[in-house]
Length: 354
Image (cartoon, rainbow, N blue to C red; front, side, top):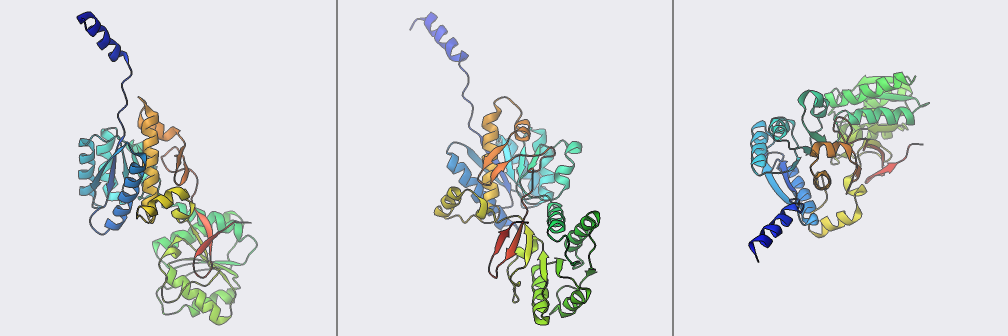
């Protein structure tokens, strides 16, 4: 080839568009310590999504669910040149990691941290953080919205076990009921972890309550149901997502209502669930949210071209294993995942509000 042709050929190659590098994703998860099981679920889901893609790379770093671990993991992921980061279970870890990742221009899709402030402070922090986990206040809002609608015209009571969790759920429902012009027949704080709840059931029956929302754990709500049955007291009991805990010696009575997000495996793409199980991964806990987060990250990276990734995440609707994902103006997954379920004696089944 002549020198002139060689120069011309080189110029032609230089004029061709550069092939975009394949996505390089980071996962920051607690792979050690008390939350290691949750981190393992995240790693399994993220790795499965990357394997299904076949082209992207995944870099995994342990946060240990601590501020020190979060900062160290963030620094390591920046050094690895990742495009986006997913994961995080603990607020301390993500708070320490975000300044490092934000300064490097790396957006984060959080799958485990529920603390409201993570996204509520977006205008102040400027952090490019997006969240697939439910907000902490989402449960209370769902309880208030669903039960004020379902129990309009009913004689209902609101009780709680005195914990922060129980009080917040009960107070949210009480305020919503008041705004809707509804008045509970009974409001009280009960003593938890008693051997039985006969006295509480008796007070509720005396007040005339036919429906009761209990802000508390599964064991106490199961004991309340047992006590009502022993008294021959026909009452509809409802609780929050704490009812998903493992059953105790006394089980919930059939018909108990629960306001909670669905079990992800029940609503996920059946083909993806089947593929996970075939590969030996049970789609529990954070497996499917981590899988969906990687799907969002990959789609955003490939759609971005030269555009800022955070802008693409904020403006795009993504199709994932868990359905459509779109982020609102502060970075939370738009819409609500909460549903109403009824216990059939073995499992919770979704029911529709009339």
